[in-house]
Amino acid sequence: MQIFRTNLSPGITVLLVVLAILFAAIVIPLLLIAGVCWIVCDAVMGSSPLELYLRRKARRRSGIYEGPFAQDDAGQDDVRETAASNDDTIECEVISARTFDDNGQEIR
Image 1 (tube, rainbow, N blue to C red):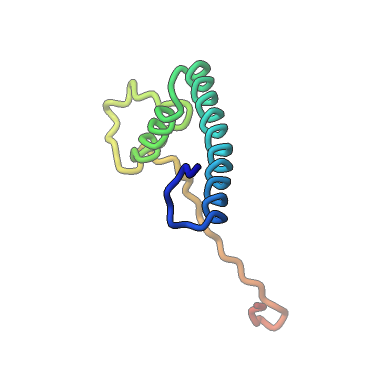
Image 2: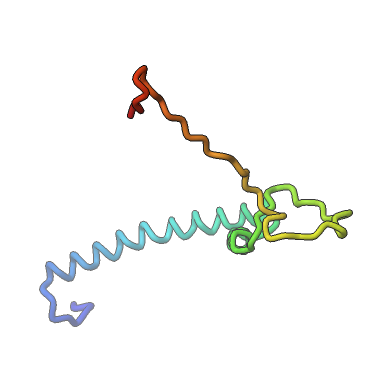
């Protein structure tokens, strides 16, 4: 009784069937595990992992990262806002030091 009509040799057909079964045995459990993780994340966090990812992505793309605590803008209406007013970088001065020997020659 012939189940499949192919031009492939019987050995190749058996190999393809075995590979398809192995693929299904790996993919189906991975999809089940991902689905369970999705449901648990949705139950614990209150939103899906995709929603959390998109929120983080939007926050990264915004010009200013405010960290876990947003800055309070109350009472700052009279202060003129500059480009660096919301910048969290630290300004520092680079000091160069040269070492000289007894003869006044610079040691490198």
